[in-house]
Image 1 (cartoon, helix red, strand yellow):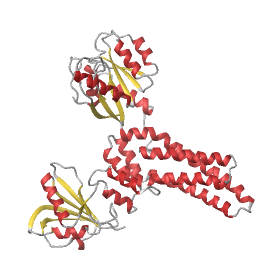
Image 2: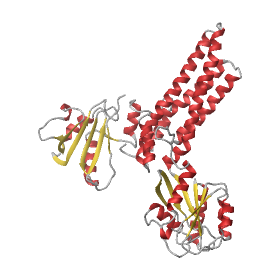
Image 3: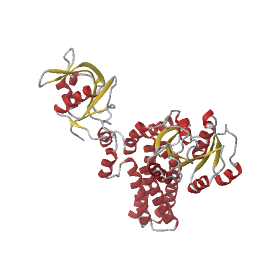
Length: 461
């Protein structure tokens, strides 16, 4: 494919040692040559691929020096986009990098759309759609484990497995075609049905293995939405600060200090937690605090994990019991805080209200109990450890939804095969499964979806 030449700033905006402006396209080298001057006068078009060159950028219109730069030259097809790519390394800073970008745009490049470099890598066949999506997962990874999942996907681990499943289905469909083309041979059908059941059963089991990792994979990718709730002044903000290990929330003895929702990501034993510290849920006449309480109730409904904090030095209240009612049926860990103070809470009543939920004791003032809490969180969602590195995780919500669809259609195909339905009818479900799996890697996906997916990427990637 041939596209116009695009350019964008590929490093974060702001002050820094260097910034990079990237160009990709058929005219990337020519555009760079029009503005780049090396001390020896050598043109980039004459240079070896995958080399870096020192020089200055000159505005051809005024012959003015714009920047002192290092220019990286990478010629097609051995580049990220499989097009000619030039990366201009200039001084960091908003003014410097924008001057470089403005210069290459004036010389004929077009400002890239969000994710357009990765989109070109996909359209030019360097990576498939699942690998493209893994690029953004890699950028957004909050923990080493999440990064490893994204790296495995970007390197094609999921793609290869999907390819194997689709190949098994193609072989099944080919066998069906033989049966349809040569119906006079009875032994063909006798061979077709067992072969179909065997292949479809294997595909179904592999899809089930992938779906088994999906809940953990999605947590690693998106983080575990974790809401800290409790009556005012039981230690919710202290718990947030202890997990984050920074003073993000205001900690005082005054009830109702937290008026809004505070969010923070934290790495708990390889699990990314999106911690939400809420306003204390209680009846209040304070208008501002009441708004915070209502927001807390809304966030509670959307949470994956609840940390319900109680005060060891106070007896259970009606408000505490209402909180237990509010989180009934949800994954909840009860945190008994302030164990450094004399115990007044009824632990038997707490354990009864908690039911099967775990109860952990802490003294956040003395930094006690956080390790036990982190272990309880890991135990709840990952049975203490995350699976081995060689396991193929499915973490993308789009992939998970498609796998559920593929599982349903392959089950329909198997059910029909076992019920002696004519093979040409079974073929419809097998073909549909093949198409659905193709949507994961982008072989059978529509242009509209491709545009939508890449529009969510950051500019310059």
